Image (cartoon, rainbow, N blue to C red; front, side, top):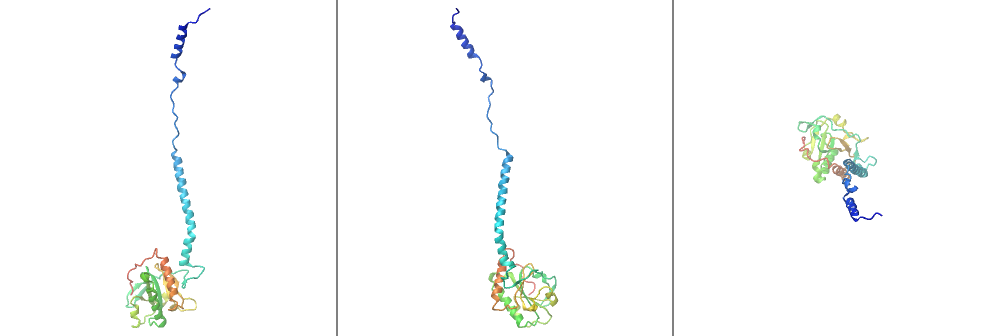
Length: 250
C-alpha cells in the first residue's frame, strides 16, 4: 500500500504556483470612445443658419403688409383718392429743354432737379388768378417750417411779354422762367375741361411730375394742399434732403 509523501505534495503545490497564469499572457487593452465627427458639427451649424434665415423670412413676410400699407397710404393711394391733389399715373420727367430767366439768361430745365417743385404757369401779365397762385405757392412753402428748404416754388412764363413791376417783389424767393407754351403743354396737362394755368403742379426731386392740385385751390382749401405736401415730404425723408443749393434761376 503506497503511503502519502508530504514532501511530494509540497513539491506539487510549489510547481503549480510557479506555472504562469493564462491571464498573464493577455495584452492590456483600453476602451477608446469615438471622437465627434467634424462633418456632423458642420451639418448642425448649417441647420442652425438655415433656421435663422427661415425665421427672418417669416418675419419679413409678416412685416411686408405693414410696409406696403404705409407706402400706399402716404404715397400711392391707388384705389381711394384720399389726397387733395390728383396723383399722375405716368409721372413724366422734366423735359430736356432750355428756358430763360427774366433777365434773359439761358437755363436748362433739368437743372431744377434735386428739390420738390410747386409750379404755376401763366402769361407774363400775371392777372388775378396768376397772382393768387403765386401767393399760395409762397404761403404753402412758408407753412412747411423747417422742411420748406426742400421745396422750391416755380413760375413758368409762357410768353415774351414784360413782367409787371408790381409783382416783381413777390418773386424774390421764386424761380421764374420763360418757357414756350408748347414745351409746357407737352409736359404738364390740365384736368379735362380746365386750362393749363388753372392748376398748381407738384414735381418730385427726381424731376417727375406726380401731382396736380384742383383748379378750385384757393386760400380756404390751401390747408388740404399743405397736408399733401407734408405727407409727401415725410414719406420721402429717408432719401430726399434739401441740398440742390441756391437755385440757378431766380
